[in-house]
Length: 125
Image (cartoon, rainbow, N blue to C red; front, side, top):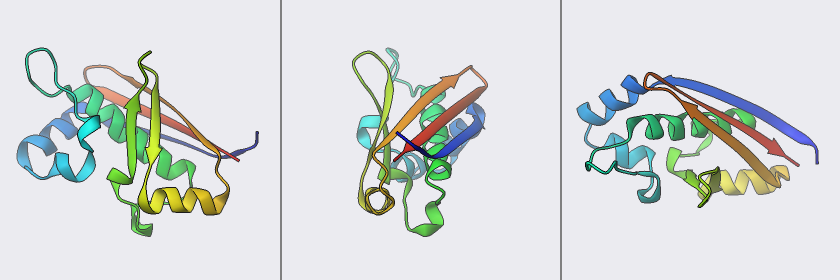
């Protein structure tokens, strides 16, 4: 297994929270239905959303491409296995680019505090 690229991104949780509160369409433009989770109190888990956003950015960096190349944020879905481990599901242009580059797997990791979230992605051939 050969590494094609590594990406990392960090974001302030407050930035994501503010974007969601100020722009009603933000959450639907960035996240798919399966990515949006609520706490037991019925409110957004902003730390998790920020972490998912950071992973999306890290995937763009690992693939050495960006949203300017026709990839939308929703083309990179960041989901969790039953164990809680994150993984990505690519669709549309992101999937097409990966197939053309020969990318076989993208490994991801997420971590967050109340203030910051970080995402890491490693794309392999």
